[in-house]
Length: 82
Length: 421
Image (cartoon, rainbow over all chains, first blue to last red; front, top):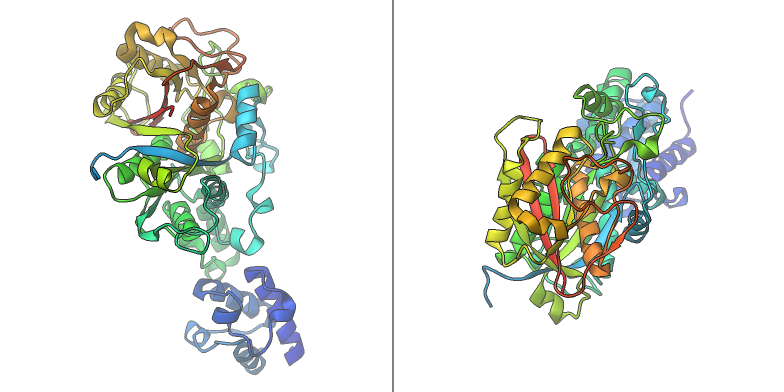
């Protein structure tokens, strides 16, 4: 069953907390992974792989570059999840 | 200012070792003769011929934040912990050039080395590859396993922009790093250098490999007695882990900012054996050459050298070859030199050894105390020298110097000289 937007945000928040140590409540739709959440390009790959596993979605490397904010990722996952 | 032969001093020290999570607790352990060796409790050790090692006393994950620790190989974690202590100990509050630390980042260097690099990361990620697939291999794998990783991570911490280096010479790596750091300052490339060694190789593969070289002690039933340099019953080294770093600084720079000075870092002597890839050269020819090179290249005199922190790993051949070399260079004066083998307590930290033993040498001069060599119950008659046995010993007043020896597989010989101020 597909995850709701709320579930995706919560899931991403847990992943970002695990990888970058950012409090889950700070992971909001308008936040930039790089500028606000201390997720550099290498850590972003970790976030993506964890999200792929959690939400049953494939995020090709070329698409990863388009995911600037948490909102971008939530939208992408909602549209592509299996 | 003479830019080609500047005096170098030590203004900070940091360590995380099997004896303690910092240099103070390590020194307490060294001077009270405490062993850091214990059984390896993990399942993988059950069928090994060697089931003992000297783990760090304080896990780096207790000190570093979780997001930081997960991007660092264990060897880099140790280096970062030790560098924070050393940097603060030198009186710096933040990275070079940042508020509170008004020194020029372009004049700060880092030289941190290990013998083996990020071997645990390499092996763990290979397990991930085989068990979970290529997609799951950590994107941090390369920066974690590269041997220059610890040095580079320390440079990020202190904002060092004069150069980051990693001389690799097996178990001499940490000492060679400090020698390189001394040269950076002596020749004018930098004013402040964080230098030393780190190692984190207590893992099934390195343990199995060293054991198969017949290099390690198999005294599994008495871990605390297993590392016994100079004793007739010694049967190899005990693998240790951890890091030891010093902050080197030009004497002029240190004086200008009113820094506390532990001692002078006089210089280094280097040579290579060209004898065998792993066996020590039995007469100590190369070791003697390195020590002589130190004396020839600096104003250090044999009379000043009252203490040697020996390489002495507790192997039958190596310990004796080193003593022969010391006798060759110092002659009768060797009888007045207090020799300590601190690996009897810390185990052998491989590339970390030169770093930790430099910290020990610096503190030996600063406190005028030579740490003991423990477990010398029956001194090998071939060890014709004054070994500090059992308990610590006071070193004399006046201008005194300590020599720190480190040698590595491949025939690398590195001798460092430190002198009281």
